[in-house]
Image (cartoon, rainbow, N blue to C red; front, side, top):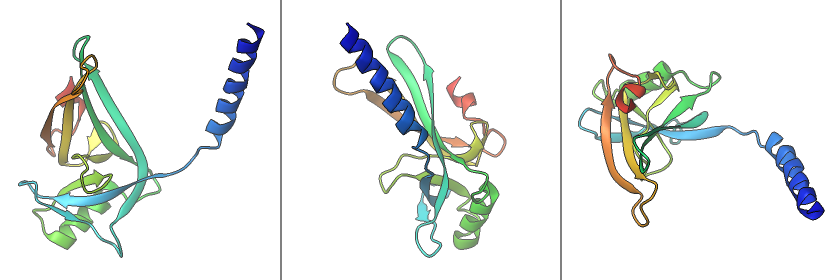
Length: 158
């Protein structure tokens, strides 16, 4: 019993020590989209990367199913949300006003913003997740639009 208590204490100390040093900026690639979901990568010498944090939102529907989505939260020292949208419009025209964050070429539709109730006009993927299903956990994905009037992602989830 003493061995297990010591092992737990050592693990706790190592976790506390290493988690305090694990401070790094997360980045997202940016692409622009139009209402028809045509996309164009936003380049600034290379594909534009912005700093921020990946945020995940989840809502329990019942004991088996959850709604899950994500957005990219911009850091204050990064470009502002409006700056990025202006770059999209300047480079591709006023139709490409939907700013999307990406983890790569096969990324879901991910909006950007400063918090979950202040997101850019964009599209976002909403997944229905089954926690008790053995093989296929994500059972349905839908792509929804956040408009200028209603840019609170919780209105779709709650």
